[in-house]
Image 1 (cartoon, one colour):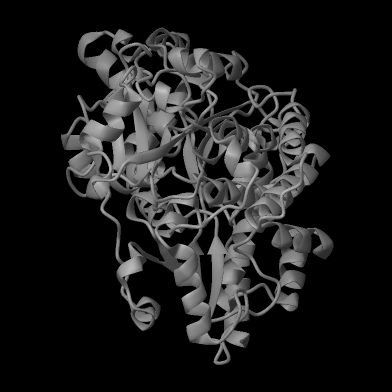
Image 2: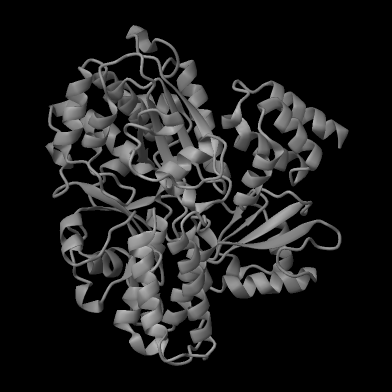
Length: 578
């Protein structure tokens, strides 16, 4: 124990910044060393970073990957997202607990194992999945319980399928950590070309391309960059990559970070040069251990080759990137909650305005985009360097990554042109439903999305058609469920997700998600009350119009779309089918 404490002290003494923004990395280091954050460790971190212990405990309690009490040598996290649950993850979790002889969340008598539910692991294309310590296990339904406890890591296959790849053209083509391979394929060519241009011209190119953010909101990326930039050199600006991919059904960031991380780094560099930013952060979800290791590795390689650091290639442009890990909080995918987390606080969204382009990270102008968006910035500049044409990337002819999972023959990431029909992606590219079964439901947009009526399965997947139909693209999640599945159970799992992930800052979301789940549980148990449908509608309306961030504003979307399509399931006892 003393040796571990000495290791922690050495880590703290080596921190470049001994202030509150180093709090979450310090707590994660303590968690890694001890399996939890002991009281004496809190005191030491408090002393070094000058953060009151009460604030530190508040942060520990907020994040699901941090613990203030002893746990077990290995924590087994079983994914209970709708796709993994439909593949039997709940039964596996119960069987694990019975095998160990302890309830969920309790260490086994020998302190070796503890079983927990996790809302999503980003492995929906390999469901059901689990995280055993830092080892990723996929398709665990075919594993015996003892083997699950001792199995070697089964790294998921990471690939992108589809039509006419643009963003994914380098994915799965070699060693993702080899900078020489990246350079040989034309890597950093877009950055080098950008650095010959005026910053205003780069932003104009991004605007002309029509690139919209790929994180869900679809805000024009060029306008965001333009709003963050400025002439004054004395103003600190930041570039932040949001890689906190935690939406059930989403796993494209995992694939990009695993197979083509340099493209994402290059996009961050291009954005930084355009807005005169000197520092960047990439915030990677806590469960993505391997992806975080890969990105740390490529940053070191890029720094050694002069693509990061001071006075890059003698241009006067200086920029560096720091990798930050999440700690298990879906809400940190909301941009301002992510800023709070990097700053060493609970990941609670800020009120808007002000917006990040003027008051973002550390209260400074910040351009924040997701992984996919930065990747497209690299492709846009590469394309411009080759033929002087950015128009290829307009929404009508651009491409988008879609995450297809559930009851389909070929789940995975698909890069498809905007305007591809939903049914073509599911039934042609995805191979349709296994075993000749019939489709029952398609969810578009993830947990925050909606069930798509069968009459709309031929809808083109682009912002314009979806907005006209009252649907959302979100981050490109498509979850398919066949005729065996119980819609009420799926809705219940989505409601449990939002209840678990609500930060509790605003009452419409805090109370609404709890009440929504309570009603759905009662309906599932057969204790239906005459006004339940009306109550659910009122709750959804209040959350949508009264919540301060997207989590609460979309927490009732799937429930309401299910209520419109299958009102009968909310009026009688639900029947579970795995």
